[in-house]
Length: 499
Image (tube, rainbow, N blue to C red; front, top):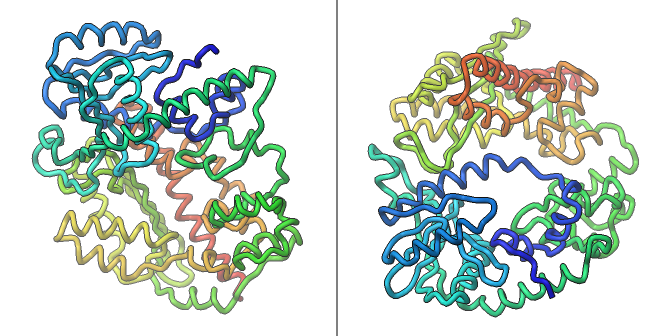
């Protein structure tokens, strides 16, 4: 049997599903991958930071051919004791690069670095695989550990580089890695038998299981479900994934199959509306109560934020949401014209969060209704601003006190249409309320179409020319403005349906 050349990442994908490996080899074009650029960048930044965890180190530069990495590692392994980063090893077609290797006189220690804030089960498979490779090469592996981000770390005056012992948590998983060695060996044999059994023209059968999403969403999900009816059980919005697979395994796949199942009323409602093409459901009394709760001036506001694993601003934590932009539409009194105001941080402004807050406070001077879509998000950002700048805390609390959440009527299904597909996200709600309106179509925007793209584009500004910066800033402003204009249009629709 010709052994498959495995890396630790390929091995971990096979722990999830062996067919992934077959599809990657023979049908790579069938993948519909999510954009993982930010995840990879975060992982790279945290990995680079962790290299200094134990002091001076020698780094093995990446080489696609792999052999030079292994050869350079063999040389450096002779110079013990030392610290080697990306130390690379191959045992019987099983390859791994160790993020940080402590190469001591009496053995080695493996440190696997993750940009996550907790240890996930798949990380244990990753670490155990590395133990398997190195121990089979004859190394005395004294310790295996996962290095991950401490989400309670607060950046102080010192650079994070000077506080690595506080920023990182090191969890010893040696006993777990040892206990998984038979499992690793058996799994590698199983992978090799699987790939030998199924060649290029002999596709393995498809089994849809919860592992299609655990620990990661599979890039081949759309391919593997292409023959299912549309919509199907996996399109039921909000249903627990385990319940979806339970119904799927019972043969209840199409919405017609599910129509008379005993389900949560919200799930049944989505199915009923779709199958029977039902007219919109509008609880006028509930929507009227929302409108009656509003007080002029009306402030329709939306924030854009980004987060980074390595905090750059004193007083912030890893992955804290940092507000850099808002759009604000104002109606000062009944019948008054719509006023638009906005803020977008300058890329080189080190105090942009304070300037964001001060600008917002100045533009919301009165105690009118602050209308948002998903109150939990904006109110949380405001609380964090109050903690960061205690002198602004009262104003942040005032704004929070005045918040009205326009998401609630849709979340509670007081306003529901088939076109919302069971979702209360504004990206579904808006086109349902205003179909075929190009002015409200996010896909027509020039550069930024969702919050993720907004974050990525703002972070990218630092490395752009002035001309590129202007283009991106314009894209950000246009996108965020549509988010708040959308809320104005929802307000108008609420008034229309309750007249």
